[in-house]
Image (cartoon, rainbow, N blue to C red):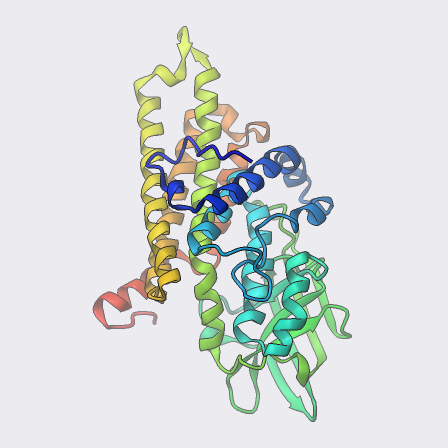
Length: 392
C-alpha cells in the first residue's frame, strides 16, 4: 500500500521510518479510517467498546512486534510510537486498548515472565485469543504505588492468596487475564501475578459516568482470597523496580498517543476552518484563527521531535526514566493546550460530538493523568537534574 505522509507531520519525521515500517503504518491508517473512525463517536456517546473490531484489529501490525516471540518484522521504537500516534489520532480509547494489551499486559509478561510464561502467553496476547489487563493503581494508591500498594499476596504452599482492590483498570471488564501487582506479606516486596479473571474471588465492575476515554472499559477490581498457583507468579518480578521497568517501556508511547490526540483535534479543526464561512469568507482566512492553527502545529511538531528522540534512545539502550518522563509531561501538556485551541476555533460546534473535537478535548484529560501525572513526571526529571528527590 502506498504511503502518504500526514499533512500534520510538518517537518517530515515519518521519513525516519523504514520502507517496511511506512507500508505497515499505511495499512493501519487505511484500516482505521475505513473500519474504526465511523464507529467511534457513537460508541463514545454510549460508553461502549466496539468488540467487533478486535479480530481484524489483531491482524494489524500493531501488536507484539517488540518481543522476540511475537514480532512479525524488525521494527523500531519510533515505529511503535507512530502506531500509537496513528491510533490516538482516530480515537484515544482505541490507542489505550493497545497500550494496555500490547504494552502493559504483554509487556509485563515479556519483561518479568519466565521463558515458559513468555512462550505460553505472548502469542495469545498478540493474536487476541487472550485479552489482558494491568492491575497496579488502587483506590488509595496511584502516584505512590512504589510504597503505598495495599493489595497483599501471601504464599500458602504452592499457591498465593491475593487480597485487595484495584481501580481504573483498562480492559478489565472483558479481559481474560489481569496482571495483578501485590505486596508480598513475607518480604514486603511488590510481585506480579497472572490472574485469570474467572478465578473465584475476582470481581471486576465497570466504572460508570466517565467523561473521558468513554470507549475504554475501566473497572474497579476486588480480590477476596483469590488463589493463584506459583506457576502464574511472574518469575522475574521481585520488587517495584521490575514493575517500573514495564512502565518505562510504555510511558514514551503514552507521549506519542498524546501527540495523536493533538493531531486528531488539529486536523478536525483545520477542516472546519476551511468550511465555516463568517463575514463572507472561510474563517481559515482570519488572522486570529491562523494564529491558533500555527500554535497547534508548533505544539505538535515539538512533541513529535521530543518523542522521536526518546524512542531512538530506547532503541539505543540509553533511555532512562527521566527521558520518558519528560516526553510524557511535555507532550501531554502541549496536547492539552492544542485541544483547547481546536475547540476555540470551532466556537459552539466545538462541543458537539459530530465534529470530533469535543471527544479529543475530553479524552485529553485522561492521558494528561495516567501513566504518571505531569507533576510526578516533572519530579522524576527534577531529581535527575538536581540529584535531589522532592517527592514528599
